[in-house]
Length: 238
Image (cartoon, rainbow, N blue to C red; front, side, top):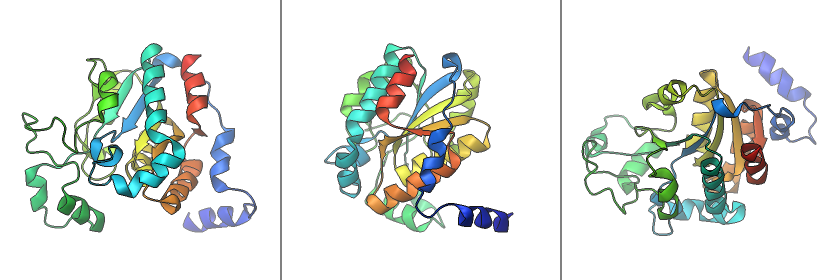
């Protein structure tokens, strides 16, 4: 199987971006079964005071990520499309893991998305793990589904898939951070679970241009479609 995939990639024209292939597979969405999913719309990534903001700042500015995510949230709410948020969090007990991966060690050491407890959300408000202030009216409106936190990158360890299926969703419009890590991993897991996934390529951000380009390549190979925020807004509003 691996040899077959490698052979396929070698046949692709060198002048053609691999990520362009998904852009030709537009879906006919059934709105009642489609939802917006946003990964990690939290202060540590998106607020200028966030612990990890500096890693994403250049890409956020280039793509206008913060504005584009808000456009998606606004449009989804206006047209009553379900919204799901998959946040990231580390509790005190997570800091005693025996064998965290290389990046996990760094995130835990920096206390990115750090929370005191999983029971009462003690001290969450205004911290790096809290949602970006301008998104709170959309996320905390009593209608958005905020899943349990994911721990590494994908939704394997939270209840996103259960929540989507419980609402009859089979198609996801995906945005959020980090483009090459959590967003990419959510894309993969959702596809593996039979969902159709459309990635909004300028409503994400990565730690640098190389990481962003790597994410685009993967989106193009895995997603059902890769579109801009403007196209996503038009699609949601139809």
